Amino acid sequence: MAARPGGSLIQGNMPVRFGSHDRPNPDKLSDDKPLVIVESPFAGKTPEEEQANIEYARMAVRDSLLRGEAPIASHLLYTQPGILDDAVPEERKLGIDAGLAWRAVAHKSVIYTDRGISRGMQYGIDAAKTAGKEVEFRSLYDKAQPNPVNLDRTA
Image (tube, rainbow, N blue to C red; front, side, top):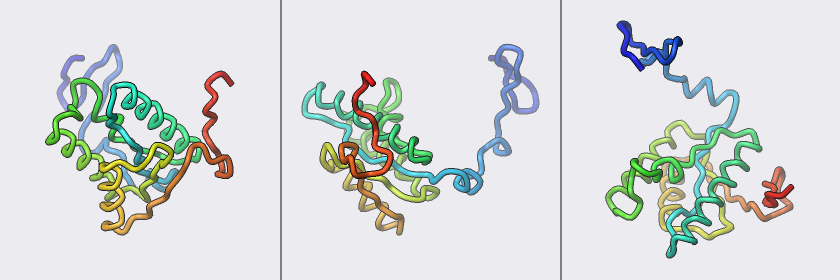
């Protein structure tokens, strides 16, 4: 990308604008879809457990999207390679706090409970309650809920 005067970049032949005037308006977005913070476990005692938690979190995000919500799952975003290291306590807290900063614009926190409630999730629940936000508990495996995620990936 090449820099261009006036606050834009050139990507291929298309200008890519950036700046405060290009930021989405959270109030306008919230008219269309409820903004939600997704809470699910991340860290695991083994690499296999952590991978299972990541896959579960992805299914939780999918479930939220299929319900017409606009979810943020910061534990999936900030723990990607090169961003933050979840094994470093200071970086883990930084990621959790950055994700919870979204509560200022979020309508609610949605807690996916099938794999338990971790310390990080409880921290998020407490923060949401303190901020006066709705906290909703969900299960992906509860067939009685509307719009459950299809967990059978062969279908």
